[in-house]
Image 1 (cartoon, rainbow, N blue to C red):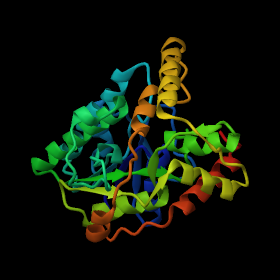
Image 2 (image 1 turned 135 degrees about the horizontal axis):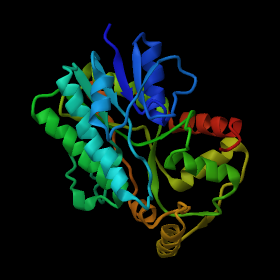
Image 3 (image 1 turned 135 degrees about the vertical axis):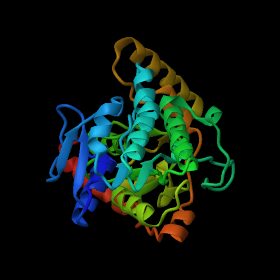
Length: 324
């Protein structure tokens, strides 16, 4: 069996993809940066960087499948250029290397942030969306990276795109911005909240959805991998029930959150320390990122569990890791 290449295996979603593939008998080759490692998994690792096309060509040589999960996932950075280097140019480097190596199929991990959300109803893969609608460098760079993936697919290279919503669960190492919601709640660092909403999904379901996309997905198609649409208030109440802690009851008006985000971002730009909530984070939160995974269910057989399972796994993980 040819090796299966996974990028981002030292991160949250990529780790779960690599774990599931290994459990199913794949020989995993993981691309890691110099000095990085893949915790707890006994898999092959090769040193590479999305910004270094030659390193990716070496990594993908002889592989049959590629799961390109790696991304620069930050909602604030003082050096935005590095995010575009990884999420846009890095995607092009990875797909070009995979194409040159004769890979059979690539699953590219995008984000629900690249899905259009109507004023009423749920976002889906058919909803029109443009770069002008993307708030912040992360969403803009991921949208541009997704366009690169679609470009390769239109050229005949078998690339399938998945758009995870808000994955939560165990092994959220950094943590991710979504995992940080759980950490802040458990630490009592969330005295108030705003009126927003997320589609919460277990990271384990996202990993399984990626395998289904590889097996059954159509090249050039996008598949939302989500589960349950919840308001932030509902998420915090569930976290309170799971952890035994008290959920905040103060709902901030949007303009207050905007001012706090603007001040936090200004301070971060001076100090270099990430803000608790950047201005772009607040702007993103103005829209409830609710979506439908009906297409993935219909075409892939994707059947996620309830969001509560994801929240339980996340709470247990962060409590075990001392809220790192």
